[in-house]
Image (cartoon, rainbow, N blue to C red; front, side, top):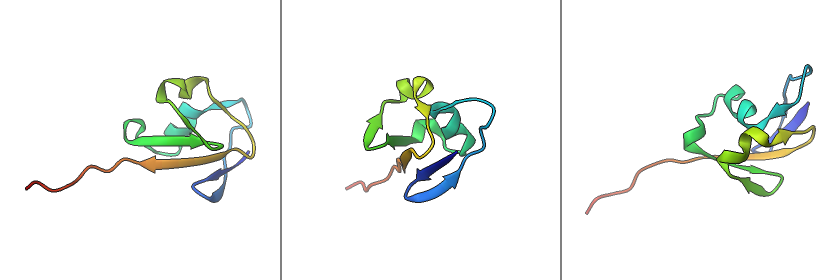
Length: 72
């Protein structure tokens, strides 16, 4: 299956069954508690990842949350 991940084409091997967003995020090595995922233009709530099936040609944007700031 081919998807677009953060603007780049990526081939995902899942020939044996459908893959949900939660499994894909884990397979790609992301830490689920530190990211926000947009699928085809819509932000997907993390509680819905397990029921969200990824399809060929889907477009994902994964944004990592980074802490920081300054104390005055």
